[in-house]
Image 1 (tube, helix red, strand yellow):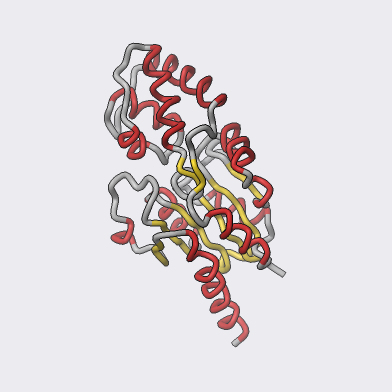
Image 2 (cartoon, rainbow, N blue to C red; image 1 turned 135 degrees about the vertical axis):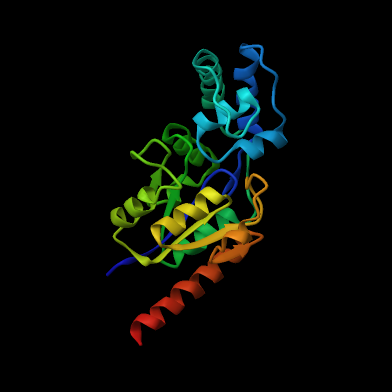
Length: 232
């Protein structure tokens, strides 16, 4: 029998990681005498992987591309600092742990699909006390493609023996929403997090919520309705 699967983004969905990411970025920028970014700016830059984040932080442009010599130095400074300070000022969003526990107890398979490199994602989840709840974790460098490409979602469905029609992707950004649509699974978007100023409601998610505390009941209803349709 196929499993029911709930997939979560990490940064901006489960954990507010912007404070520690911003500190690490500015550590790298300082080493190259480049102006720092504010935490508010960092929140707008997060979501498409650490490479993209570095280019944005250096150029101060969303689509900017930094010279290779600057990029390498800043990126190395960021990596060293961030690997040692993953969960200092970051906080788990309200309702995240409780929702994961409830869904796990209800028999759902759980996955975390993030564009954060795997070598940061796993220890971050471990430090936050969430890692043990996931059946699968995929970082931005785990496969040959990352979100919004559907490959990570499809891979997670296959690896957990789940049913695409009973799979939900939960995230805070257009990247998560597009990944869900590209993989043809249900999408639940949170109104907080790192959406880069984009109104996700305009892109037609399956459901939009303001807090993860509402998540288990919505998902149980969503997948329950699907079960009833399949039985009829």
